[in-house]
Every structure is written in structure tokens, then in C-alpha cells.
Image (cartoon, rainbow, N blue to C red; front, top):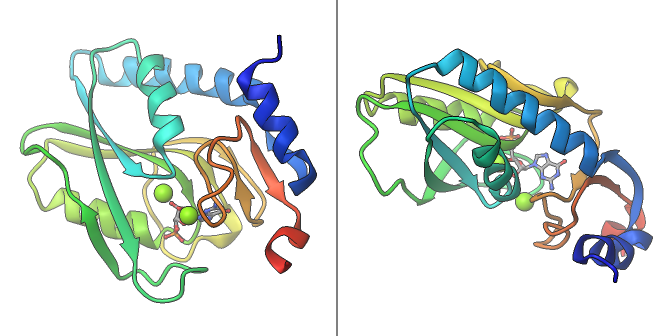
Length: 190
Ligand code: 5GP
Ligand code: MG
Ligand code: MG
């Protein structure tokens, strides 16, 4: 029997130029990050804040990779202006359900591109008097950073190219691809 993941992979195959981060690499790195965070946090229970929608796959796997009790919250934000690049002006589409005062907040992000969204988000969260705010991001594009963000935990540094899969979309597609891949330019040129 073919697994669902293998089937999704083959359905999208003709749209993907190459694999950037494989399923195995994601699994191994997520487990490493989970252990590192448990070691760093010790007795402090982190409150995970996943940024919708891109971080949803990473959030689900990461929460189970941290050998500590964690709680899950989600926020949805959107940048104003051109959809292809971040403007740094951010609007909250869905706010947290709970008060984070006194909590150890760990923001769970899919990817850091310019850093503008995350920089805004960290300032917004810090203003709510949490005990701490740290960030774990699965991916980072070092060549695209416009504003420095203090990201303590990063999965993979990747080239400055548009990737999809494992939560990341192009026009809401490919989020269900089990790995991170480079989209063929012919897909967005058509
Ligand atoms: P930033 O504010 O750091 O420029 O943008 C961050 C957001 O833009 C990410 O959370 C993600 O939603 C989106 N983004 C940035 N780079 C990529 C990419 O290569 N592929 C996809 N699908 N989304 C991206
Ligand atoms: Mg994001
Ligand atoms: Mg998107």
C-alpha cells in the first residue's frame, strides 16, 4: 500500500524542482531541537505560539518532540501591502486565546525571510509581559534578512529561493507536501 505522504509527493512531483529539506532531515532536526529546548528550559513549561498557517506542520511535530509538557496557542498575522514581500506592517487576523503574562513564550515559525513579520510579532508579544520570548524557526534565509531578529533556535539555513511544502504554500497549495522543496518557476509563471 502506498502511504498518503508518498502519494502527495508523487502528485506534486512535476511542480517541484528539487528537494531542499527532506522528510528525514526534518524529523531528525525536530527531535534535536526538542531535546535542546527541554535541556534549556528545564522546569519551565514553554507556551508554544504557532504562527498560522505556515508553521502548522512544524508546530504539530515539534510539540511532540519536546520532552516537556507544553501548551499550544496560535496566532494568525498578515502583512499589509504587496503579497510577494513583507512590508513590516502587520495586522492580527487571529489573536492568542489566553493571557501570556508570566509565561515562557516560544514562538514557532515556519521560515524567516526578511524577518519583518517576526520582529513585529516579538515586539507585540513582549508588550504582554511574558516571563520570556524566544523563537524557534524551522527555516531561515540568511541572505534575505532585512531586520535582525534574535532567533535562538533554527532548523536549517536555506538559499534565498521560494520554497513550498511542510506548511509553506504557494497560493494555498503544497502545504501538505511532506518535505520542503523548490517550486519550478514554470508554476508561478503560468
Ligand atoms: P518575512 O516577514 O520574514 O519576510 O516573511 C515571513 C513569512 O513570509 C513566512 O512566515 C512565510 O509565511 C512567508 N515566506 C517567506 N519566504 C517564503 C518562501 O520561501 N516560501 C513560502 N511559501 N513562504 C515564504
Ligand atoms: Mg510564518
Ligand atoms: Mg504564504
